[in-house]
Structure formats: structure tokens, C-alpha cells
Image (cartoon, rainbow, N blue to C red; front, side, top):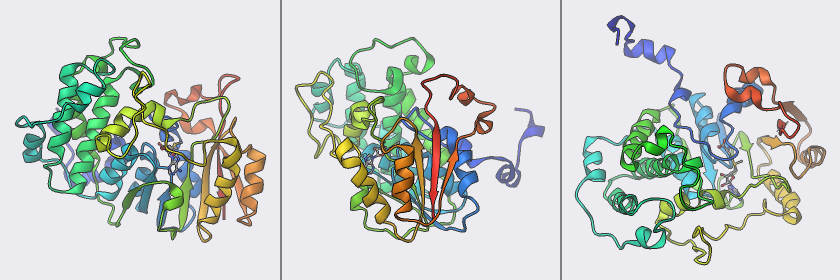
Amino acid sequence: MNPQLTLDREQFEIFHDQMDFFPSTRFMGSKSKLLDFIWDNVKHFEVNSVLDAFSGSGVVGYMLKTKGKKVHSNDILQYSSNIAKALIENNESIIDNEDLITLLGRSVKTNGFIRDTFRGLYFTEEENLFLEQVWHRIGFLNNPAKKALALSALARACVKKRPRGIFTYTGDRYNDGRKDLRTTLDEHFVNALSAYNKAVFDNDQKNSGTCGDIFALENRNFDLVYMDPPYFSTRSDNDYLRRYHFVEGLASYWQDVEIQTSTKTKKIKKYQTQFDSKNSVYNAFHKLFAMFPKSILVVSYSSNSLPTKEEMIEILKQYRKNVDIKKFDHKYSFGNQNHKIGDNKNSVKEYLFIAY
Ligand SMILES: C[S@@+](CC[C@H](N)C(=O)[O-])C[C@H]1O[C@@H](n2cnc3c(N)ncnc32)[C@H](O)[C@@H]1O
């Protein structure tokens, strides 16, 4: 590197954008391309505590953390909530060299569960053994934040190594030879640890993360609640477990989940949520909005979903006097691939409802 271009710490703090360090994935429904749009529409509210109620990839909570907010991230998936614990709740712990030696170190005895259950489905025998070994070694790490970092990195390695990053099919049929697919699983893991380490930062707030059904969340005291639930749609798939069951199972080593052994993919039985069916989804939104009587409600919404846009406005008006609707404007996406959104007839329009 040209030494004249090296920034000292202070210059670095001024010029770098913390968001650049977020290790993004192609998580279904991720709002990574809508972050400026979301922030521009909420930044005028004077709020401190915020809830990212359906955190998914974690990217929205992370963005709010970079803005100095006190963030709580929640998701029903352990896969997602590990990311929240690693990058939202955790302000300081990183995986150091000693931890790395622990994670990649001496062989531990495992029960062969991954090799037996998923033989020939997603990864090679050797890779399955690697996953078993690393998962057990993560148990030797001495703090929960480090465990969450290592588990998130292990899941990221699996997703990166998997053609299309999903587990809805078995075998290797979508392997187009791209670099991520030629990189070994252990290299992906080390790269992912490094990416997660770099993303850890302190925003001087006591942030937190939980795993669970949103309706079971105990703390309901937030200035602003951001909601991006899985919308019910007859046209698109919103089944997160079907896509990510392998990394979800890996998060707990398939404890307390039911593997559907008759399926080819050996997927986990769906977690029941009220957002899944046409019959329950309306009531789910009523319950959700009623949970946070004092908060500003910010709801991400895609067209082609139920409730319809008009129905959603009606529902929100029962809980708040003011309901603003913001439509995603493509000016936000200049400079990246996102300008393609909206180019065709089947495109989905993105909205933000803001109720206060
Ligand atoms: C549209 S995604 C969120 C995407 C996220 N905003 C992002 O940018 O990555 C919806 C998320 O809701 C979670 N989810 C589904 N039902 C839930 C429930 N009842 N309680 C909490 N989370 C739930 C899913 O696991 C999924 O991660």
C-alpha cells in the first residue's frame, strides 16, 4: 500500500463508514439495499431505544446501531439471533488468536450426527466432519459473545459454500464454479471470523438481542419499533426455515427442533407463526401494533402481500393518529444493481409505513 495513503486512527474514524463492515449475505427479504431509505424517513424522530422486531440478516439493527441508537434485535430464528448477539448486543468481544487456535485446534470426539444425518446432501464427508468439530470446539470459548460470533461465522461459511446460499435442494446442481464455491469450507470459516471481527463496534449503548416469537418478547418499552415481518403472499415464498433449515439446525446442533426425516432435505419442522396463513395474518398485525402502545411504528411493506396496502393503512389507523406512507424511490439505489428493481412488470414495490 502507498504509505502516504494510510490513514491514522483518527482519520479512519472520520472517513470510514461502519456500515461497510457489515458482513452481508443474500438473506431472503434483506433490506440491505433500503437502508438509506429507511434512515432518511426516521432520522427526524428524536428517539433513543429502537426494536428491530424481525431482524433476519441483522442489517437494519446494525444500521441503527451505527446511528448511535440503543438497539434490541429479535428474531424467531436462532441463526438470525446469533448474528444479533454477535454484532448488535456485542460491543467489544472479538475472536482472538487464542480463540482461533481453540476453534481450529485439536480433534474432539463428536457423535457423527451431521455426517450421519446429512451425508451426501449439502457438503462432503470431510466438510461435515469439520462442521461437527468446530461446533463442539465453539463450546470451549469462554464468553457468549464470542460463541455467537463463531456460530455466526460458521453459518456464514455454510451459506457461502452452498450454491445459491440455500438448503431447499440437495446436491450440487447449481454449482457454477464461482469463487465462493471453489473456496474451502475452512477458508470460508476463517474469512467469516475475520469479517465478523471487523464488524464488531461499540456505539456507547447497551444493545441487546433475543431469539423468539415476537409475541413472547417481554420488553415492550421502545421509542421506535421497526417491523419487517414475513408477509403472507400467494405469489412468493416466505418460508425462512425451508431455505435456512441447515444453518438454523446448526445453531443449536439440532437440539429442541424436529427434523422431518421423511423429507429429502432433512429440513426442520416449520416453527408456527401467525404470519403464515391468510386466516391469522390480519390478527397478527393487530396484536403486533397493540404490543407497543407508546412507540413510533415503522413497518416495511412489499406490494403483492396480505394485508393489502390499503388494509394495512386501515389497521394502523386504529392504533395511531398519523400514518405516513413512503415509497422506495430509485434515487437511493443509484450506483448499485438496485436500479433494476422496478424495471419489470412483476416487480415488487417497497413501502415504509410510519405511524405515530
Ligand atoms: C423479511 S425478514 C426480515 C429481514 C430483515 N429486516 C433484514 O433486513 O434482513 C422476516 C424475519 O422474520 C422472522 N420471523 C418470522 N416470524 C417471526 C415471529 N413470529 N417472531 C419473530 N420473528 C419472526 C423470520 O425468521 C425472518 O428472519
